[in-house]
Image 1: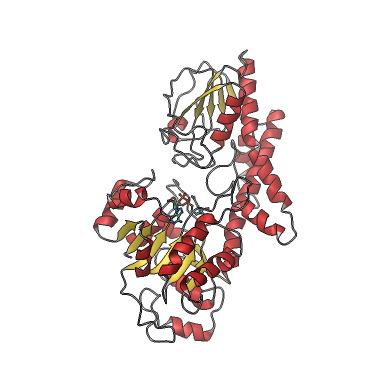
Image 2: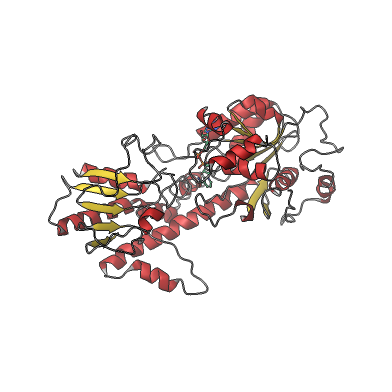
Length: 465
Ligand SMILES: NC(=O)c1ccc[n+]([C@@H]2O[C@H](COP(=O)([O-])OP(=O)(O)OC[C@H]3O[C@@H](n4cnc5c(N)ncnc54)[C@H](O)[C@@H]3O)[C@@H](O)[C@H]2O)c1
């Protein structure tokens, strides 16, 4: 069911306001008015989402469950095939949810980009990683936009959702769309940026209740995007332009990165002082103002926090500015896997064993609790460092039975999860999965290194890391 978008914080001029009142239900087709396009193709899909991953697939479901007709497009041919057969490849989305929207013909998945011409709006949710030299890799965005451009037609709305540096929508996406289609943004088609605020695996995070920030290339573009997102979220936050929306997403993730770095640094200092950082955080969290808790860990993981801040770092150089705090935070967080390795070394040393030749069981390969996402996981850095020192490393992860080939784990792809009772010299808990939170480790005779403070029934040889 359609929901009202919040009134824009940025005033849309009166001409625009009166025109926007003429939108039909979709908010995309203007009935009459100077951008009415009677030559457009027959409407088949309300929305198309390009890139059916952790962000794109839930977005498809949000629209489909709101009654919209959705087209999902992905270059990986296995994904549309699986979805059409009613199968989910994301652990926290079940098969039935997919099968229901496919059966109701509310959702169709394909790898055929030419179908995009039949959608009112096209939302881009493809990866924005860093290259090996840690600079923004916009190749996925660029290739996607080039594939969309030949199918772009009058009146369509294109929204970039991938996280990126301020200026991408205007400087990269717009020219490619205009060149490839012969159309003009803001006049023939509409262009906007709206960052995703997906929190995968968090049962308390309800997509519809998370406000969505939207910036448009022009006031008309903004109005169109607002109207679209107003159908799936309770609150749309309009901002002045695409750059503000792009910068907002980076600010949110940089805020997390910097605060996690701070608490990681405090963890190391307090540990040397014999102070339990977790108890300190708990106590500090009782302050009702001016403080919010962040938690230490074995290092950053996932497709956001380890990557996104460096999109700004790179762009800032164009303006002659070094983002020192952001880079320092990155350094501190990146050093955390080595800190964990030093704690494993301490634990083995106390047991009279060298790292070389010792067997290590790592609990958790996914970067966060109760999900199967292992992208940029610090577990891989810990694993690699221990193996370089001559340890034999095994892992257990109920969510990652086999390590899939990914951008950061070629070396270990194909390895399988071993039994929790596997015989080793030391256990390192890297991810706070429910299975480990509920496990009774009290009878464990070997050392346990806990990076997450989730072990309530602790063994005698317990090491916080
Ligand atoms: N994962 C998160 O929690 C999260 C949260 C907020 C924002 N983001 C951002 O959203 C974007 C997407 O992230 P994700 O986690 O969904 O990535 P993902 O890797 O899970 O999914 C991306 C999908 O895009 C597909 N793809 C790649 N190139 C394509 C192309 N040219 N055309 C069509 N499909 C293509 C891939 O096959 C894959 O299915 C990134 O910019 C990320 O930073 C992610």
